[in-house]
Length: 153
Image (cartoon, rainbow, N blue to C red; front, side):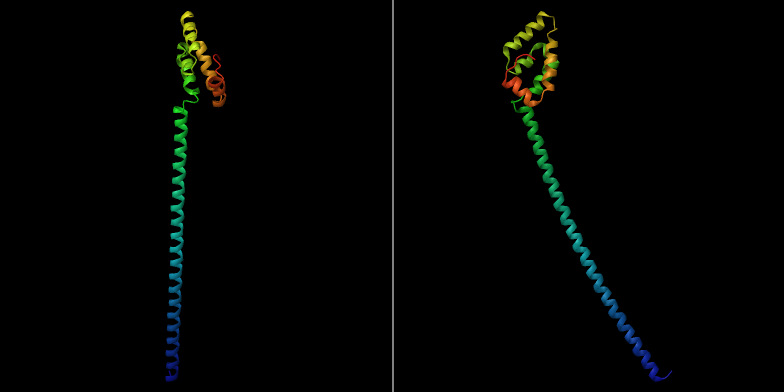
């Protein structure tokens, strides 16, 4: 091999080495860019997940607050006594306690007298009234028995 060929081969090898180094450097830079992009996307997704979790937490708090408010209104409101009057009428309607709960003192006393005179058959009236109370809508019950003061059935 001539000296000239050796020099050409050496130059070609050097050129190939330089080209390979440049290509490796380019690939390294591309890998860094891809890594940075992936890191950025992961950070964005984590932020979105945190935001979604915060929204879910706020929605859950709001829902629980609404449920608590509705429960308190239904049990302690004192405005609509449908549930308590209906259950008492079905369970111990013969004693007329549901009448006293609704503010019907005269009707409550009459209910007790009917029960005593008929040896307990007056409890059927309480049972029927309890079923009627519980099948009416809240608004209808309130208007009929608490505002309208309908004493019987």
